[in-house]
Image: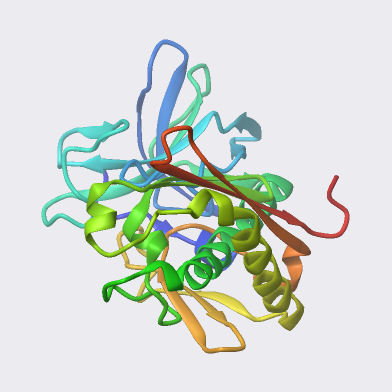
Length: 290
């Protein structure tokens, strides 16, 4: 019986956890869906699925079961809802929100049994560094585009106009980096952002971003996550002690502990043919990566 939100330890960097199984149900012809009281496995959030699921295994009764997927689910008291869209927003009163582990259906699983989560550490690290690189690159992008605003705009964590937060359409965290796509539509222009001549300036803008990122990585600024509790629904925020000031961004993902872990961070900027979509590819190259 699911009586509480899943307790999570991945924001602290944990890659193993041991907990009781609280719910099991079929997930399809070949899978079972398993909910634990607590887990170290990072799930996909259907509301903003930027960071994918952890890889790894669920060990039950001496059997190592591959994690085929890890997702956020919603329990209404009688039914577990899992999918690309949930029927209730995270934290809605009367619902329980849980991490759902998808494993092969032929596994022998019982409520009350102990399960141990083992996360693939290299894959987790690659996404954690990619997610941290995404955040610092977005701040550097905002600073590099600050002179293109003709009206006052919402500010980011460092006080620059928040182009990233205003124009972002989608973000994909990938191993050692990210791909962020921004909409340069009429609403953005009405808000005061100048798009004229942007394409011709992209190389210079990227150079300024890379220069700022190099300075931040060289500072080896500390990175940490703050949260009021270990419940899945607790609001979490990313903190980074940058030389200018500590930046704070709401975030539910996993991250590096210091910017020095990122190694060389570079970006590539590109406009689509219509000039209405800007893409930023961010890559981190820590020592030892190909």
